[in-house]
Image 1 (cartoon, rainbow, N blue to C red):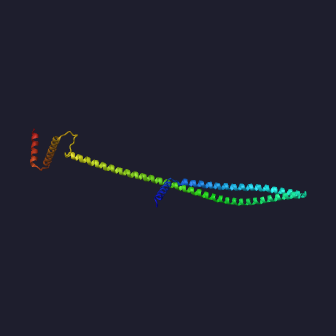
Image 2: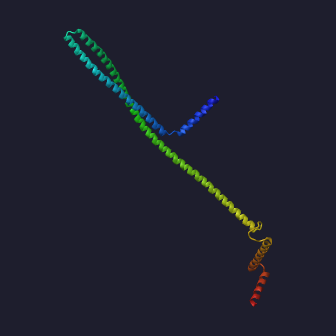
Length: 250
């Protein structure tokens, strides 16, 4: 295949695809129905024209027959008047008119046949047009229903896709929220351990160390108290009791 042939094939395929997207079967069916009605109307016009032509020939035949009868009378009168020449002339004209009448009769017979054929064609075409019309409306209704179904399905599909996107967005938001919470907790732990310096607290390193020592002292005092209460350290228990007696004497 040559280059130009390939270009032509690609162009035709593209145009065919474009036309398929643009074509509405309902519009095509309506156009075809209108064309059939035009053809049917042309057939009806043909029948009317043939009928008119036949009618004109029939009227012409009537006149010729009338003239023939008149010439017959003239020839008879000429014979009565012993005018053979005049009688011959009248009879010759009568014979010529008779030939015209025969020709008109043949033409009328032909027009009769044409009219019968056209009438039959009109009947068949009318039947086909009516069948096509019924079929056309049925196809249009089915196409409209299918089109509506497709639009509904596309809408549902679009909603489903959108909901899927929303679900993914929610999942990402939840993941980011969990990450932020974990970072916040980690920073709190580091700040409590003194690894990170809280610049907003206004405390320097000495304050933090003193606070740490105070916290440890409090912890040791609480531990001694608990051991004294449960009797784990008799010496501290005794010291605690003496301190209590001294407070009572005071």
